[in-house]
Length: 300
Length: 171
Image (cartoon, rainbow over all chains, first blue to last red; front, side):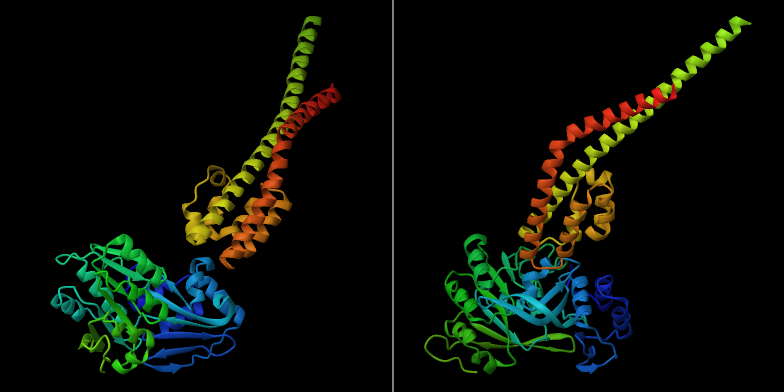
């Protein structure tokens, strides 16, 4: 399934999975970025950051039925991701699910009541320029790179394009895609690439398996940030495999404020950090060298 | 004249014998068809049991979506009976009326309970439901299998006996 899907493709993916009234609503608003359904409350549509209320509401029971349909009558297929608050439709449309969590041993094991479903629609064609691969080429694929930006800028898209480029002719690097959320891989884009895909693995477990068994030359990983992941990344830092990762942060200061990321920057896992921006459909990365790792602080 | 009468009587006797033979053959056939129906019921039950085991393994090991699971599943008995096609159309919800044609009400109830859980609950709950259904169905299947040869003989014999009885009445 390709990620470069248009709004119309997304609608056809949803056809048969959501009821006709919602589908016609999405057809009525082709610029819709997000459709948010709340139990017992009005639904909203987000267009260009503004929220519109079309005057429809659903009960909790109806939301449950919609979720069941979105899961193609197989909740078990999406169980792991649902417990983490989302599900993917055809590896292309993300649906955020929130409700009443059932917690067992400090982990969410199920969702009791469904309070909100947010269907995120693809709304603009992705950027196709690739400053990240340029930088990887300049450094001869030898340095770890951390890409950061707020949500929605296109970190995943940039990582996907770059992973595909470095793993394809003429570079042909053995590349592991740590695709925990099933969002990075694109079967069309990566058709002829040397990509080893690891979908759904917790990153710490996946990293270890990748290093020990797949002998990668590069690892791509989306949205790192928790402490366990940081420890796993630290454990692999001297294995000679550079990591190209992304993280949520609006600026370098925010990046520095997150302890797991600070740990990685201090340890010198990432020699380069890049703030990603998208202007007029073109990716721009503002590079910053992480020279001050080790005992000295990384200056923002 | 008497010769003609004798020939007429002889033809009538022959027709009577043929008629009696046909009556006996029909009832015997009914008995045999019913006995074959019993065998098909057992085969359907075996196939359903295998399907539930397959569903359990696929859900537990691969989290396979049910629609995909039914599409890739092959079973000659379920195909012949049209159950597999119904499953592919809409899962157990659509297939249950067809299954009801081949299985006892008690067994269909087990499948109805399974259908309420399948695809709608957590993996653990679905596994438990599958295991429960498998246990109940295999107990029933074992007793059905044990009684099958005896019942098949019984229905075939009953068919023959009914034919003979009807023949005696008609004579």
